[in-house]
Image (cartoon, rainbow, N blue to C red; front, side, top):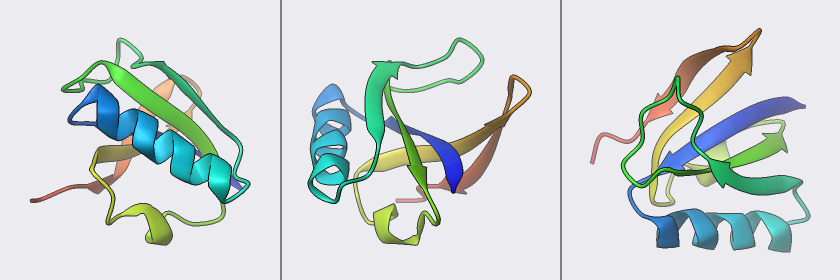
Length: 79
C-alpha cells in the first residue's frame, strides 16, 4: 500500500473525492494542503491505496507521494 496526497481545484471536489474513497472502504482524511505543496483550493485528501489508476478521472489537480518530508508528483491533471 502506498500513501498519497491528492490536491483539488475546489473544496467541493476534495469532499466529493473523500466521500468516494469512504464508499470504497479506502482509508482517507481531509486536511489542509502542506505548505510545501501548492494547490488551488488549499484542501487535500490523504489516502492509502495500491494504485492511483482508479482515481485519475476525478476532479483531482495533482496526486503526490511523500517520503521523508519531500513531495513528488506522481500524476498531474492536464485538462
